[in-house]
Length: 262
Image (cartoon, rainbow, N blue to C red):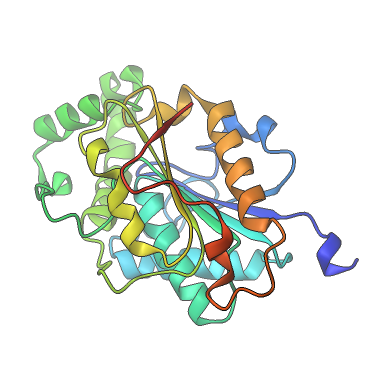
């Protein structure tokens, strides 16, 4: 098949405690893409592998998964929360290797290197306080927390992933050429700082705010799929060949801090 005719691929990078099934509610709305759901070791189909706790090792693992399954010249990276950090880092690694994402979608946090962000280190909390923080975030079913045996099984996975996210080593120099769209929930702690993500792309940037807490994506699967599809279409649209700057610059950009509600 001609490469230009191949369906665009969408790579999904899960949140802390997640797995390849974390975005299942969106899949019915993403039929324009070949969806590839990724998974870190120590869970799901990779249960037999040891957990990772280092951000760079986790990014390298995701990078290997993507490059091994990449078949289309047009592809999108989407990550939520921990997955958002990893999506940015992996996109940076891929561009260094000459593989350029059409665009990047991130959700569930206001981006790395946020100066006024309080250092939390949730992964170091004792059991009682760790559970309390999970309940604040939402997204963890009450029946899981209330079932001691089940929670004891998932707790190491959650702690490992929080360590990956909270000790990410992304610096202000980790800037990608791909356009980037950031999405957050109205009730998230750092939602007012969502424009922080604009510092990490040289191309088009946009923000979207949806009603809900940290796991607003579960309330708005179709809206999230629409955002992914719309941003991909904008990034993939024919561009003015006379542009001398990065061609992504032809994508309309929302002013930093101006959020669009869906």
